[in-house]
Length: 443
Image 1 (cartoon, rainbow, N blue to C red):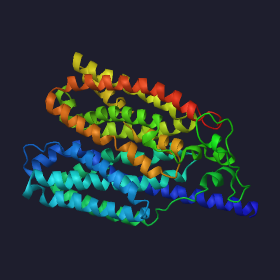
Image 2 (image 1 turned 90 degrees about the vertical axis):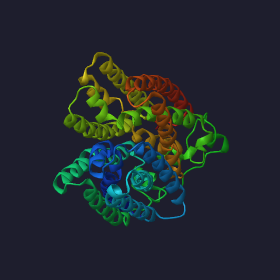
Image 3 (image 1 turned 60 degrees about the vertical axis):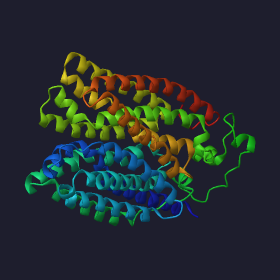
Image 4 (image 1 turned 45 degrees about the horizontal axis):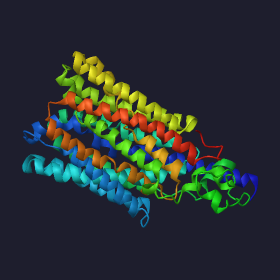
């Protein structure tokens, strides 16, 4: 293969992965509407004639976890486009059924359709898109994760406000839900035809521009296994995670402590996101501003994903993890201070910064850079499965404390984040130990 042909190969792959990245962002924009739940609570109560809609959000998060894990296993047998079609169908059924039957049937349709089917659709679509596209970017894993998940993060602000605007025109949110279900499904179906896995040697091609370079040397068993290897193979220089691609995440200390810490962070994140509007009004913010704050938090969380992705690529996963822990803990202290001193401005600052660590970019980059591309969809689904115990913990804590004991909840959340910060320091040491001898990996 000539140099010009090699360059063309790299250029063609670069164009293709850029198209996939943009289309993936659009898909996740619709899929992420699941997080706009708090914006729809009051409209659904009014238009569907409901006094209380119960723990719909947390049920939805449980279904999301089940959807991510199920899709990750099915991706071993079916093409990504098949799973996106499944997600599109579930998405259409979830929103259309909720819109058509919400007023007639009542709260039960929210549990079954909006929460369960919507959560499954979101989880399956999320895993199909992120699990397929991120491996296309071994050289820009953090930035690719951040850009993809930007669409997922700003969905509440962009589409959520469009839904509310259309509701003011149609007079009923159910009608808008039907339109959203159809539009999201059609778009996801069209984009699914372009989803495909990258070449297995994508890291080498993007690093050298050549798909037919010299055969990589193979490390001896003592070098390939264990964290004390001193010499990296040629293949590991292109993609250091190759050394660990057969590791079982459930038996790896660095993954287990990360999973526990991310679960604690998710308890806090779900508790904040699911009650931003009501917490704001409790502290004296207007209903309009409280609803707007939901979108601002979504925008902040979305934009920070690009920043965090760039930091991961430049400074590494451990540095970014510690930074996230510090910023989030400071944000939670602001929220606590807002309740103690009755200062809603502090709550706004805290809400915007306290969910930095409840962010899938770090998890996406962590499992790809540490455990490789071979089992990336499954490993991604396993780490995101922490949302399930986090949602269950939120339900239990809320039932014990009561809906008005928000200060007590945030005290618990602050303790959780203190533990997360300690874990981030341990994580850094384990990361350095695992990658000893591979100079291309940022410490």
